[in-house]
Length: 167
Image 1 (cartoon, rainbow, N blue to C red):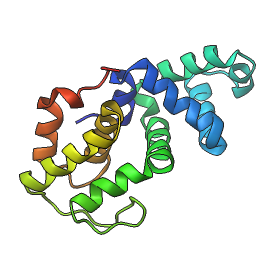
Image 2 (image 1 turned 90 degrees about the vertical axis):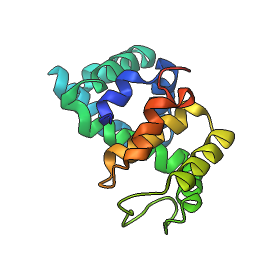
Image 3 (image 1 turned 180 degrees about the horizontal axis):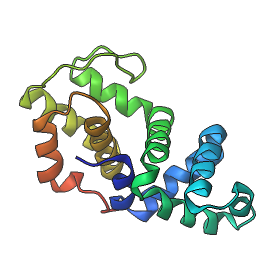
């Protein structure tokens, strides 16, 4: 099970850049919070990063987000991206599992899920969404929630379509 900072370390640079660009363009408060966290981790003022060319700044931010001490910032960035950009994916997954949710957000998860329901839900996501985005979501879902389903962990480890860094 990956932590948020590990997801940034294992996902493809293309997807990591897409996530950060999404925050830059659409979720300014999240972007600024992540920029602040990266600046603190690097022991520089945020303005130092802000003055750099965007591609250079984003490369610095992404390499820093893959560090353990940035797990909270990485998690915030991932959750924002998933909830704002891929809300339909979250909703589709939870609906396929018959888990009550509000726009992809759930209060209580069952302690376990049947293999049949889980496999069908994952197949539906893979048919509709980019595989690496699905892999990031499912890893984040399993890692950030208290449920931590063993059968989902096994799917993530064994299904080649759900391997990070393929994009």
